[in-house]
Image (cartoon, rainbow, N blue to C red; front, side, top):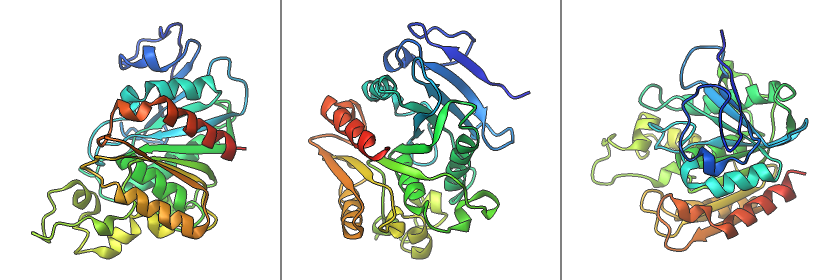
Length: 299
């Protein structure tokens, strides 16, 4: 039997017994409705589960922000990145946005394109079941962090293309993405390489792709969000740390340049002195601009 936990927060007290992180009290306002561990792929894989959070007093047709966690494509789970983004999560729910957080297979179990297939399949499930969960299937946004920023951008920018390898059973999904919110995600894998050892696969990108970027530029290009930029893409809100030592901020500058050339609405925020992730990205000004960007483009 499908395990579907429903919890209504009363200062975040759960109706059901469920393992939830301690930051929930801070992130989710009173009255938030929580659906936990919903299988989205009609199988029993633990990495094929998602959670849905409905705003307090939600009626039908809530706009949805889909959360894709980071973790170098090989660790973390659908709660990751939430702990340092509690203010943003709370503001989204209080504004009337629903949130869905998805898991996906790690590169240690299946190499690319398994991860983007999972993301597409999870969002297609949300689209097909939108009425059941009081979601507006025509108002989907994606919000990703690091590896999740890469997957979200790749999904959003390729959404209007035909890329059979990105879909389960090579069947293109029905949903459309209205807005992409990209927090320090890689945009062009061809710029990541180790000149000292072309055969070195002991890094997260090579483990994801199954090859080092320089040895297989074709795979690197196919997995890079910038490859799919065109004038029909959804607006993109980009945030990157000035002192990010894991994903160079040039990756976000490059994505913005491609979007500008294609005439795609976008905004880039470089967070002064910020590293790769952390509480500095939950700042009030970033949060305010993000929600304004969403409100403008989710209409």
